[in-house]
Each structure stands twice: as C-alpha cells, then as structure tokens.
Image (cartoon, rainbow over all chains, first blue to last red; front, top):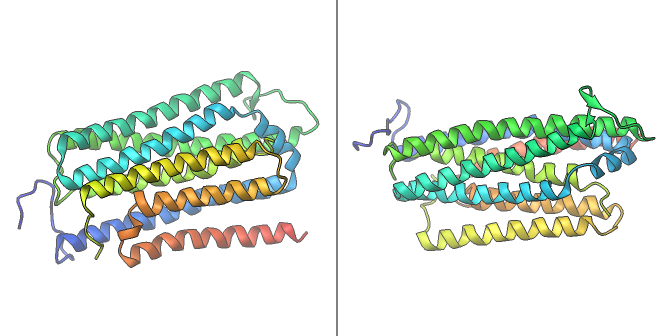
Length: 215
Length: 95
C-alpha cells in the first residue's frame, strides 16, 4: 500500500493499474455517448445542407474564416499542452504540469474570447436567428437554418469547452498543492481525454461551418 | 492492461511532430477549400478532419498504447455515429 494522498484502491479492483484501466474505459464510454450527442447535430446539419446547399454556402460565407482558422490552431495547440500536462503528471514534474495545465486553460479562454468576438460580429450583422436576424436575400431559409445550427453547435461546443477550462484550472490548483503523483493522477488523465474530445468536435465543426463553398 | 509509458524524450518529440502535422493538415484543409474543386472540397475537408481526429486519438489520447477494450469503446462510439449518418442520409439521398 502506498502513502499517496489521492490513491484509494476501491473495492472491486485488485491493483492500481486495473483501477486506472477501468477509469479510462469509463471515460471513453462517456466520450462515445458524447460522440452521439454531437453526432446527431452533425446529422441534422448533413440533411439540412443536402436540402439547401445554396443557403448553406451563403451562410458559411458570412462566418469569419480568419478567426475560425486561428481558433482551430488555438485548440489544436491546447491539445498539445494538455498532452504535455498529462505526461508531466505521469513523471511527477509538479511545476511543469501546473504550468502546462494553466497554459491549456488559457488557450481555452483565448478560444472563447475569439468566439465571443465572432458572435458579437454576427449579432451586429443581423445573422442571429430569432434574436437579431436581418438577412433578406433569396436564400433566407437556408441561411436561417445554417446559422441556427451554427449557434447551436458552436454554442454547445463552447459550453463543453467552458466546463473543460474550469476542470483544468481546478486540476492546476490541486496539482500545485501536490495532490497528484506519478502513481496516481487519474483525474488529469481523464480530463485530458475530455479535452482532446472537445478538440475533435471542433476539428469537425471548423470545415462544416467555415469552409462551405469558399472557392 | 495498457502498455507502459514510453521514454520521456521520444514522447515529447512524438507530441510535437503530431502537433505540427495537425497544423499542417489545417493549412491544407484551408488552402484546398479556397480552390474550386466542386464536390471534392467537402470530401477532402472531411477526410482531413478524420485524419486529424485519428492523430489526436492515437497520439494525444494514447489509444496507441491503450488496452484493447478501450480501443473497442472508442471505435464503437464512431461506429454508432456511422450508423446514424448512413441510415439517415441513405433515406434523404434516395428521395
């Protein structure tokens, strides 16, 4: 038995490795349900775009390609820093791990700020269905549906990211206080999986929202 | 049981190379989107997105050294998504 502050071998597990594997499996099963949670929205997108391709092309044209691309790079980099944080926790590099976790959370905040700027831009341009929608071209229906899905899907993604930022920041604080060890840092590993998943969702959101008929 | 953690330096190099590959794929998807390729654009964009996802999952999410049952859970999630998309789209595409 080790004296790690966080390690607690629960009843059904015969060793720490098995317990960690079970936790990892549990997180992956949760992520699989999240794949379907977002997946159904992507299915709605696919059908809607199939039925009104011109409207979607027009709508996508009104998204900010530069900010969207920058944001994608921001999230991809945050996955790198998160992976480095998990690695740091496994090696017991406490200060480095705390630093990487804080960088990850900060990059998440940068993403949300840029997203907020985009949302504000779209509000000013009158592209927010129901709340502030002024688009009156021939593809009005398609553009409405596009932006409805845009705000719904990126909004849901942003909510997931916000939760992730909160958890990562909390982990940074806990880690700074010596809560994690090389033998036990399961929350860091599992949060890393969640964070990468949120990145993967955006990896698909980027082309379907920003790159429709850009040529 | 999952495989043990690889040598520290090799792991960092792997992460950095993966990150550069991801950024490279991002530039390719952006660049190709600006070239008129008709229906090939969406195929290319989605294909690149899948490639990025595989990189993130295999390297950053450690599926490369994950227990088989974990890989099965990951694959199952996407299998169900594929079923959802296939059955839904086959309906609309055949109308």
